[in-house]
Amino acid sequence: MVHTFAAIDVGSFELTMKIFEYGGKKQMKEIDCLVTGLSLGADTYATGKISKEKVEELCHVLSHFASVMRSYKVESYKAYGTSAIRETENSGILLDLIETRTGIHIDTLSNSEQRFLDYKSIAGAGKDFYTAIQDSAAILDIGGGSIQISLFDEDSLVSTQNLRLGVLRIRERVESLGADPYRMRLLEEELIDAQLLTYKKLFLSGTVRNLIVMDDYISGCVGKRAKELGQDFLSGKDYIKLLEDLSTRGTYETARMVGVPEEKVPLIRISGLLVKSLCSILKSEKIYAPGVTLSDGIAYEFAEEHGIIKPEHDFEKDITACALNISRRYNGSRSRAETLRQISGTIFDSMKKVSGLKKRDRLYLDIASILHDCGKYIAMTDIGERSYDIIMATEIIGLSHHEREIVANIVRFNHSEFVYSGSEEDNGGTLGRDGYIKVAKLTAILRLANSLDRSHKQKLKEVRATLSGSELQLSVSTPQGFLLEEAFFPEASDFFEEIYSIRPVIIRK
Image (cartoon, rainbow, N blue to C red):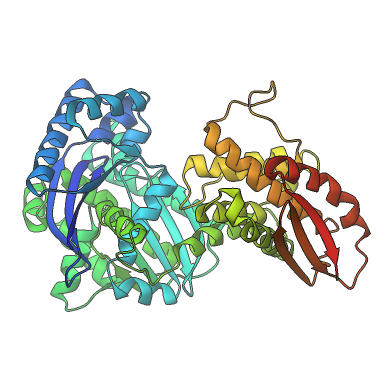
């Protein structure tokens, strides 16, 4: 059975649609790719809105995409807008207009969602990704509005940071200074070096051997040169020679050599400078360019969600690794977080049949357990509110803004009095009814887990949770005194019963 799927990327500089077939000998096969240049980001980054003329052109291109999808009898599609749409002041109105005119519904990706899909597209490209991240590696994901640098060590995500150094943003910023071409290049280099050196001071502690580059600009040149050399990567020296070769050619000649429109050549140069600067800072030995795009990540995720492919890499582990890195930054206790994760996870699993919670909700609970007291870094008072502020201000790769708000509120209400929806204290967040109910349910679990380690001494050797009628029986084994935990348990138990209409009870062994 073959399923046809279309992945649409409404990017900052161009619109891309890839059509895939799932099934047959190849589980996932690209059968067509349409790319149209349209610099939406130039408007957004300069004025905050996309001009009427470009909106008309955008609708024209998407209508053509819709026609092509019909010709391929596409059964399902996903269309995503990135920073040019995300940062537009009137994005809601714009997206409604587009859907009305073209029939294509576009969802806006947060930066962390976009980078996570980009990351999945690299993972789906083949063995090079898995080989590279077994050692120290960095993924440099270059977009029109920003770049994302993700560091790996022995197959584990160590850190990820977003910097507003996208190629279009740099170009618009430097052009606004009115410099001549020679000074523009110097300004671009200095602007890039200044931010990357700050990044180095804050987040780097050693060398990173492998650099994986993903973009719509320089990576095509890197991949082409690597093939010419009979390799799947370029050495640092080979890359510098590539940049030197490109710099000796004019715009027209470079465009013909690389196979891109002439207006894209300045962006290739900026992207090349970004790779060069980061490679120098990391002291990387190998540069990989898998040649994938966001559309590949969209298709990969669709196949993953529908059980068409089974990923070799554990992507949820990367999300929790990102949370652990945030906790470490704010001096969180690893042992305390792990204890809460184990206890809350045990309670979550015991409530599966009656809670209405899903697998993804278990991930929110894990992250909330890891970040449960990060606010202590700021102040020992109002921990819940300070933790909320930190989480909402810190990107967690793989989580949308809405999901991050769920996690932040779980942590907040683990310490603070629960704010009921509609009350005067309700801060009017964007949770919505479903998000509010989810926060209440997961907060009840985290509070209960927290009460069982109230002393922060990890006294419990074992916790088992069994749902029996209207009781949740928590069998605990501890060789130490349990006085503090037993004193705080009733309060957490009352809130849990209010939410689930099930009474937790402690059974000591």
